[in-house]
Length: 189
Image (spheres, one colour):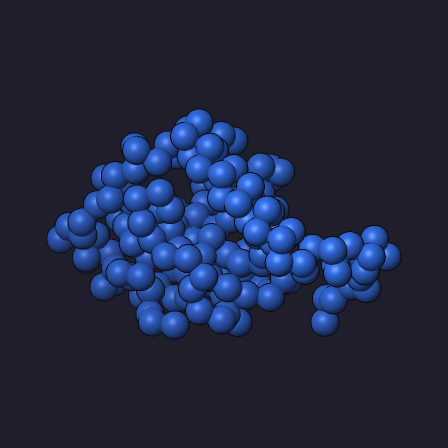
C-alpha cells in the first residue's frame, strides 16, 4: 500500500478540526471560496465555464465510436465521484493513489503537460475521427508526445496534482464541436 504515516502536526490538529464549530466555519469559507473562484473566471488554463460547448453525437462520431470500443481508463476504480455538466466537462473516476491509468482507446499522444495548478499533470490522446481524450491529475506520466498507444499502454498513475481534493482521474472526451459526455462512450462502471 502507498499509505504514509501521519505527520505529527496532523495528529495534533485532527481533534481540533473534527469539532462541529470548526467544520461549519471551514465548510462555509470553502463554499464561499468556490463561489468566488467561479465568479473570477478561468485560472491556470482551465476552460471558462460559460464557453463550454456540449456536442451531440454525429454520424461520423458514432462511426468512430462503433469502430473503436472505448474502455474505462483505470485498471481499478470505485465508480464516479463527479459527473459531466456545464462547469465540469468530464467525469471524475475514483481510484487509489498510484493506480495504473490505461488508454481508453488506441491513438497518438498529442499533448503532455506537467503543472501544479488546474488539471495538474495531464495528457491528451488523439484518436481516429477527430476525437481526443484528456487524462488529468496524474502522479506520473509514462508517455511522450508522438507516442502511439494501445488500450494496454500504461499512460501513468493516479495522483493528486492540480486542483483536486482526493485521488481520482479526471477524464474528458472532445471532438471538433466541443465536449462529449464520457458516459456516452464508456462502458458502465
